[in-house]
Image (cartoon, rainbow, N blue to C red; front, side, top):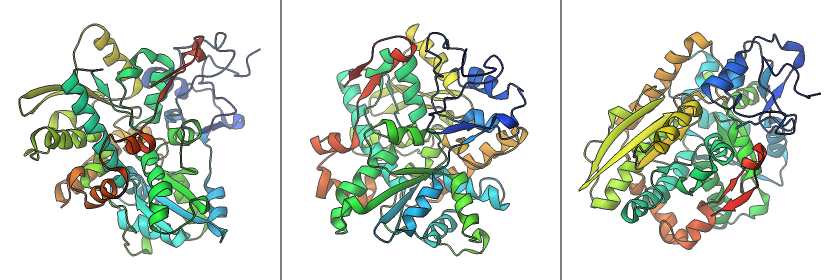
Length: 444
């Protein structure tokens, strides 16, 4: 008998999942999780438990958690272990904050949806006792320096196009399991969190004269799939906590979020291009801003690419860079990824495609505070609007103009795509279709 009871009406969950757990006492057998996984994410229903040896295929996106009406499905928490590390005086505990956390955390304290609370968030983390607080926007800037360089090289050589973004670990796992033939099209860049984790332990530790073995590296993120990513990919990260877990930490320590004064990051700051990574289309815009500079030696004049903004699941645009005219697409939700992959297989051409597993991107990751499903479209729109407002008002809008990024390359990495950059910032992929009955192999 299958260990996954009632899998005809609900999504199966593995006991060894890094991100998701189920409380059987609460399950109403309503089918919401199954519908979300099958129709929104196109995972459930695309494999057979009999053929997978009763192993549930999961990309760890966690959208089933968000759709569950009564908490039957929930996050696996790591925040108590992080609090224990903070209490250990022999450890240096550092944390980096993903872009979308700052527009989601306020929901828990009654702020209007999308309220930008970066300063409060930084202050809260310092009150919790983290030794250093960094911005993952820095890691996003670093990702763009590598990814835009990679894109330009592929376009010049007409090699492995379209190039797919690789920031979203749920999307990456989706490709490895269901579409391993598309692995050569994936950017080899690690996600921003993994890049920044590598820099913290292999560069910053030396700069600060800290023993890297004493560093506990944490990231707070809207993403449940990051919990699996740091376990399954060669990583310098120790813990992933979600926005939800951060709110639990603050309440456990009786820190009044509303009364906090704004504070700034310690170092490793990012541009507004790094910030908009949280929105579906944001990675694409950031990459094209820097790709334009790499190809023309001039900054793009019109920063906004309106056709790839917003909450639609598939968005397309033509983008002119010098003499080049690129066809790009932005996809959110892996069900929509299946659609665009089918279009490619049928002969439709694209040069560059961004994919995020969660609807509208990271701003609605399953680690964000949960909202009524009827409210979610409005919540997403407000979070997106808040991020672009910050981008409009920012002084530093381009990843390649970030002085700290420039210094990192000068002192450590040499240049984008260098041997050291490949060592610390890039990765390989695995053909995981063996989970569906095929042989595993490593693809460079």
